[in-house]
Image (cartoon, rainbow over all chains, first blue to last red; front, side, top):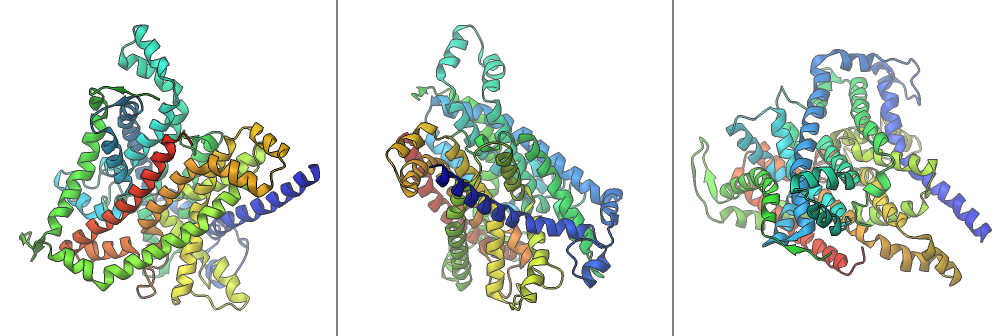
Length: 273
Length: 290
């Protein structure tokens, strides 16, 4: 048995090693390029920067039209996460605890919005938000992203809430708690990890989406991902800056992952195991 | 869990209802509105009936885009699902290396989609990309901007790179929930590795796996940004998937009527297939499998 165990362990290490290598190679190449000068990128093929430069990063971090892209993205992602979780919490509670007329249809209808291709909504969103005067604001992008984040948040939270025994609610009501106080004081701490997971997913899908955020903004709320197209200029592509901008967009995600690293395994099960 | 019948629960759902109606129903009605009208510009519309739907349903363009889309989604599901399960089975169960794998694997999931496109666009270039340069150096004729097959392979490898981890992480979460006693029982019965997988691990993973497949199906069917950045839908129309074609039609040529009819049918196709997945999933839930 022990022999069998060891050989499997070695096989697993090889498999995981290869898989992680496959995941990291393109990222390594991006980081590598971001630390090179454009001359070196175009003239020589080097596996690490021969003359190391941080000029590409300096370009981005000193130019307001660049770094405001990050600020804009972070503002609307945060807004979206807060809005999505706030409205999803009571709804998820209703779906997990009560049955009411049309509940199943309503739940599926919500999910259909997660399925809707953003390409379908790009033009109508543009017209809708222009007509109510929200075009090129952070709130417009945040609201547009609730279209697919709210259903997902409800879905995830409902899964976690189902795991909390109903007796807890009943005991709290007998003890004289009102709904609001019970929900905030007792129920929310119980599903804290679920809220964390839902927030993580909202952050993730809002951060990575580009089609809607680009369509709904022009200057004031332009996301970083859209700003990146600036590197394509008359004199060709500024590869170094493009790569540096790419690396900087990976960082916020990496930070978030680092903070939730101990919840990832349970979180990804969406409360359903 | 037995649920109490309580119609007042509607009040709890109300905020979601208002918000999602604002961002879903109003725009969707605009699309429906456009799909039955024609325009000569200047916001002058007149009734066109179902002409656009007939046009789109019989158009070669829609059929080939749908074909390419179905092929792409099919291929990536066939690769990603088994690969994701395989990776999950090989992950360290606990300790530092487990966390290390989880963090590294989550990384591609949080990269903005156009940056994913940019990474692979650079990575595959013959002049400055590691992949393209290496393939060229060992004598393989590879150029994703010229050759349709190379473009397809690049996009598929990119999607596998981007999303396999999602399936692996979900499957891993399922695996972690299996109590040790199950494995001990299997060992006493001298069950083979395959039987352990088939009768213990797979059933325990089925719930999360259905979610994984549903998410992957929906998202790959909506794919836009990554292939747009890498190939722009080319060479020719070789990688013009449904969303790329739709954006071209709606925002590029401003053919609102046909684009709207296209949108509605696109949405309906996704809806129909997702409904099947969803029904299967809720049935699994009811059986108490999850």
